[in-house]
Length: 386
Image 1 (cartoon, rainbow, N blue to C red):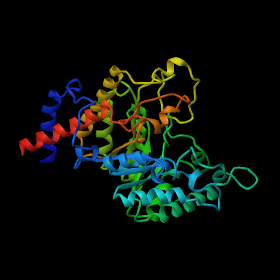
Image 2 (spheres, rainbow, N blue to C red):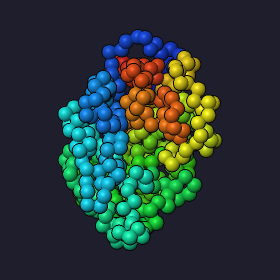
Image 3 (cartoon, rainbow, N blue to C red):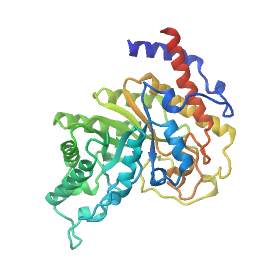
Image 4 (cartoon, one colour):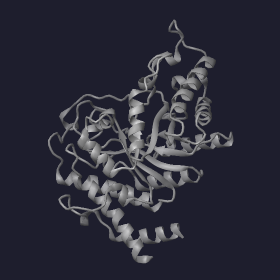
C-alpha cells in the first residue's frame, strides 16, 4: 500500500512541482531536513573533529537541528586510529561516537579498508619489503577486530570496504588486492561481522551511476552473497557536479542495487558548482590539477543563476529518492557547510566551492529550501489523500 500510494502521489506531484516556484531563500520554513524526510530515510552529515570537540558551536547547533545520522569524515580511517602497528589512537573517534550517542543519532563508522589514508606499515615487513599474504590478513583481522570491537553495540553501521572498483575495469589493484588477492574484500566483511554481528555492514564507492562501475558493483555484491558473506547495504558516494548526473542512470543504479535485497544509500552527497579540469570526471582522491582562474570563478558569492541550477540539481535527485523511499535508507551529505567541504581543495587546492545546502555562515541556500519544500509538499499531499 505504501509503495503504490507513494508512486501515485509522486507522479502527480512531480508534474506540478518546479524549482522555479520554490520558496525563496529569504522565507522561513518550520521544517528541518530530518523533519521533512521523517519516515522516508535518514538525513546525515559527515563530521570532523571541530564539530565534536566544541570549537564549532554554531555549526554543531545546526547539525543537531537538521540531521539524525552522522558519519566520521576522517577520524576512523586507519592512518588516524592505527598509525603504527602496536599503537592505536581513539581519542577523536571516541569523541565522535560520544557526540552521536548524546544526540541519539544513527552512527556510521568510516572506513575500515581503503586504498588511501592507510599507513605503509600495514603492507611492509620491518625491513621495508612487502609483507606476506598471511601477515597482511592477520593485520587486517587485528585492525578490524580492535576498531569494530571497541564500538560494538555503539556504532550502528560500518563502511567496511571503500572504493574497491577500478575506474577502467574490474577491481582496483590496490596493495590489499596485490598482496592478499580479491578475496581481501570478503575477508574484511567476514571479520567485521565477527567483531560485531549486529552492526550493519556496507560497501561504499563513487561514480556508481556509471554503467561499468554499476555493473562491477552488482557483480561484487552477488559474488559475496553467493559465498554467504553478509553485506547489508551499498553506499553511492554521490560526489556530483552541476548537470553531471543523468537521472535515468541514477535511477537505474538504485533499482539494480535494491534488487540485490540490500539497503541503498547516498553516503557522501555534494554537488560542485565549479568546472572540472578534465572531461573524465571521477572521485579518485589522488587526482590533482593546477589552479587556473577559470576553474575558480565564484570566490566571493554564488550568482543567483547558479544558486537556482544547484537547487534544481538537488531537487532532481530527491525526486528519485522519494520515488524509491522504500528502498533508500539514508542520504548523507559530505560536510555540514560549504567551508567544511573537501571540494574546496579537490582536485585543485584552494578553490572556493559551494556544493552543500548551507553557506559558509551556516545560512540555508536556495537548494535547502527547494528540497524542504519538496518533502513538505509530498507530506501534505499524502495527508490529503489519507
